[in-house]
Structure formats: structure tokens, C-alpha cells
Length: 424
Image (cartoon, rainbow, N blue to C red; front, top):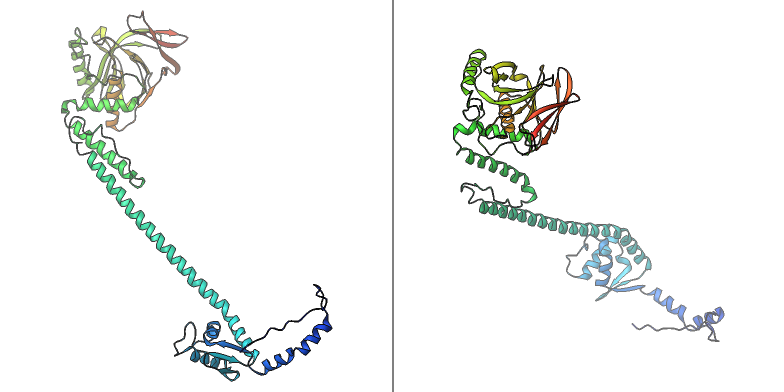
């Protein structure tokens, strides 16, 4: 039905911001506005299409929420009003619902206002659940991609490792020059274990080609390398170790027979099993006297012999009393043997063939290997200034190289010893 717009003039002067109350009341009375309102109130206060009404108030009825299953929107609106017991205040048209009392709308609005927060929470819960499911799917997809990528990295690493080590069995290097690929972080412990196993396998491949007669020498060299720890410049690892040089016709051509007789006598007396090391030495004692002596190291005792008297035994120290060895970092042949309950023995290996041959590593190696077999520790110290004990007095021994020195010898100064070594 048509509606008309009525205009009320605030004043006759057309001035903004001025309201003439009497003039406005006159216009309202003579334009029939009050009568129009009374007529409207006597009829229906609200007219709404069924679809619009149902869309706004359907949540207030259990038959229409969230979507009704009735035959039409008109039937759904009728069920909604019956549940609220408001069907007596309305009239049903062909396409609209006519509501007579404003109180009916107020009642419906109040019911709707009470349910809106619950519906909002329901929608929020549903949307948050949707977002959580989307995030969960993304995370699962991310972890799936990560898992497959890690598998790819592992397979690629293993394939590269297999490709690089295909020729590792070929002698003589046995894969020494092969560069290991960079592993994934998760495979770093695996590569460390593989590298250790490879080193052991390569060592077995190299060791199985060594004659059994040379195995004792190899073990002694390994023990010397571990004891010296790279602190000595040269320790004779490139040459063959004879160990018993006093029985050799090359190093001891004139007295090797006398030494063999003395060795036989000592073996019958002390019952030792093997000679670990023997050599001529130059020694200095606590009285600052330098003498030529011989050093014999067996698996039972450490002997100091006198070559000028048919290798007579001057001193015998049980080998289990030897606690440590001190050497220097240079090419000199100075060695100090520390013994528990005995004076430290200060000697310099000499009269070797070839002259000034480096045999310090050999002495340290055979002694360290023997201590390892017996399960005890041997302390090996490498220092250019060695501390020693003689009759409870602490002394120092150092090395001085002199070009004009013909043979190694000791000199004493202020209670300390100095080895004069030929600078060749």
C-alpha cells in the first residue's frame, strides 16, 4: 500500500537551527499525522515476507533451526509462532505475515537476543575447528614431505657412499684417498661408526700382508707413536728395528761374542724370556762422571753393563719398577729412565751404525709395548729440559748442539747436566 511523506517546517523564516514548537504542533494537527498513526495501530503493526521473518527468527524454534523440513516457509512460520504461542496475534497472507501487536515482535526479539551469543559461540567453535583441521592437514603434509625428503637424502647419501667406495678393495691404498661425502645431520653418528669400521678393515687389509716375524716390530712402532704423540721430530719409524744391537756384528763387531756369553749367563740366572733392547750408551752419574756403558732391557730387568769388563752387570733394576721415560723433541739420543725406589738413569745412545742413528723411538716403543702387554701404564714425557732425581736431589738435564763436538758427551754446571750433541 502507498505511503506518503509529510514535511514539517521548523519555522517560517527558513533559518537553520531554530525550532518553532507551536508552528510544528499546528502542522502535525492539521496534516492528520496523529489520525494516521491511530489507524495504523488499529490495524497490523508489522508486515514481513515469510522468508525474511523466518531468516531472522528461525533460531528461536526447534522445528526451523537450522533449516526446516516443512513443506513451505509459511508452514515453518506457523510452527514457530505456535511454539511461542503467538498465533492469535498474527494473520497469514499469501506471501506475508501480518503482526498486530508490537509486543509480539518484542517477545521474538528477546528470544532471539538470548540465543545469538550461543549461536555465535557455535559458529566460532565450528570455524576454529575448521582452522585447526586445516592447520593439522598442513602440518601432516609438511611432516610427510619432510619424512620423504629425509628418506631421499638418506638414500642419496648411501648411494653416493656406495659409489665412492666401489674401488676401496684395490691395493695398495685400500681407499685411503677416498673423500667421504657430507652426511645429513641425522647420519653423522652413522658415518662416524662407518669411518671407524672402515679404518679397522683397512688396517686388517694392510696388516694381513705383513709377515708374522715383523708384527712385534709393528706393534712397538705403534706404541711409540702413541706414546710420543707427535712431540718428537724424528724417532726412526722409517727404518727396521733390530732391538738387540749389542748382539749385532754391525754395531758391536769386536765384542758381540762376549755380550752373548754374558747374556746367556743372565738368562740362566734371572730367567728372562726375551731381550727388548740393547745398545752402547754414554752415561753420567751423580758424581758428575761420564762413562761408556751398555744398556740391556729384558722382559724382567733393566741392566747397566760395563763393556770394558766383559759386560759385567753394574746395576739391575726390576722392569716393573720403571715408571716413566723422558726424552727431548730433537734428534739427540738423550733418554732418562725413571724408576721407583732407584736413581733415575741418564744416558745417551751412541756408537751406533750408521753414526748418530735415531734409536730413541725404538727404546720408547719396545718399553711401551711391553708395559701394554702387562697391563700397566708407562709415562712418557717429551721436553727440552728434563727433570730427574738422584739420591733425592732434583737435577735438570738439557741438550746443547755444537758443530765442533766429535761425539756426544755430558758436562756439568751448577749441579745440572748438559748433553753436548754434534751438530751435523
